Amino acid sequence: MTLTPVTQPVLQIAKNRTVQIVLVAVVVLGFVYIIGRSAGRSQNIGPTVDYPTRGNGLPSGWDKEAETLLQDLYNVISGWLVLSGTKDDVFQRYLDLSDDQLTYLYNLWSSRYFYKDQETLTEAIDNEKWYDTLSGKKPKLVNRLIGLKLR
Image (cartoon, rainbow, N blue to C red; front, side, top):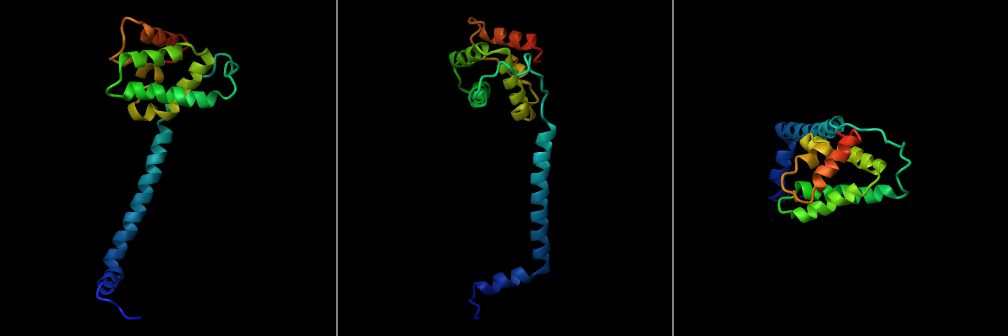
C-alpha cells in the first residue's frame, strides 16, 4: 500500500501516544458527562401526590391528552410573547378537568419539568406574572390545586 501525502501525516498523528491518550480521555469524559446528566435529572424529580379517587377519574386514553395539555401549559408559561388570552384558555382547560386529571398533570409536571426551575405545577402557575387579572382564572386554578393539596 502506498501512502499519499495526505495519509502520511494522519497516520503519524494516529500513532502518537499522546493523541491516543487524549482521545480516550475525551471519550471517557463524554460518557461520564452523559451518565451524570441523566442521573442528575432522575434525582431531581419533584413531589408526587396520590390520586384523590385512586385514579378512577382518569378516562381511557387520558395519557395522550395529558401530554398535549402539559405541553400547552409549559409553552404558555415559558413563552416570551404569549397573549394573556391564550394563557386564560389553557387555565380554563385545566379548570374543566377532574381532580384525578389535575393530580395526574401535577405528577407529570414534577417528573418532566421540576428539575429545570425547581417549581411544582402550582408554583409555576402561581409565579406567572402576565395574565388576564380580570378573568380570575389563574387564581381560581391555583386555589383549586392548593385545595387538592398539590402545592
